[in-house]
Length: 374
Image (tube, rainbow, N blue to C red; front, side):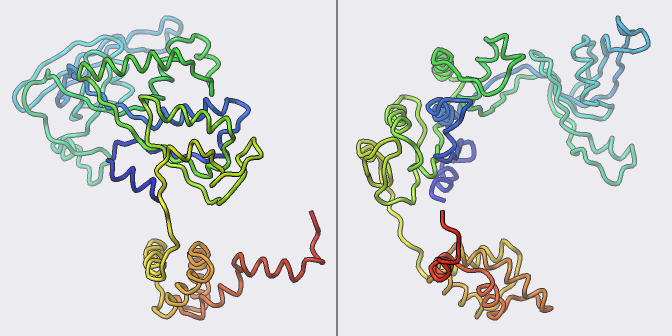
């Protein structure tokens, strides 16, 4: 909850990557590579790019087709003639087969408002004009209704998009490897590739084309990491391009995996020394009640005040998670009894049916001799 809260406070474009400590152990990839990829995913690059585009309403469209060279019965697009219109001007363009194919793939029709990227050849269908919708006499349409663009058809437009450093690493690796086209998958990325990407991003930043957005890497069950992973994190978190790293653990004094040494939370002391520790405390009764009210509203059920008070007491004595999990069965019991609102008796019946951890342990001790041993 703390990690998600920090990510939201930082902004919508801030990358948030959540992993579990047990995820790093894989036969396909080294654990240090997995951690590095997770860190690179948590660093965003906001790229600003000025591109020449053609934008307007399609008033005329004719696609010229020729027989396929290998199958004369099949027609393929050779070129196209398209007329675009804005509120201020109207122009006709003849485009080659690449643009013609894009026009067919996008299903562009007369009355559509489109954007053509002159450099990449990409065509984006923005929607349909209100006039075109009315002409087709449609009562409901899935396409967005947009206004006819203003100004010139040819214009310079800034495009802003956010990618992660890992996305750039993957793109660079695939561009440089012929075999990756045929043998894709989770391959490891070399340090040389990452250095190349870092240099490229630094140049973009210097030129004002991009800005770096440090995100949040949240590692849950951090006590599951071993000494090698901790040593890697120790070095990686001090690198120039590093995200905010949040480690979470529910262990007290625990053995560091891969050693016989015990340490707080199962984390080496030299790493703990580099961390800012956020102390947490158990929820108060008032906080438990508030969380339960939010959860009840989320599940779209109704509960009497007396029942909520009883459920709050359960959350305080047992655990909040157990109290939250009782809402669904209590709701089903209420419906079975022909009521829309959950009563105290419904919660009590659900509590009898489903035991919490303390009652379960008591049950195990009581019937220990009858149960199979490990």
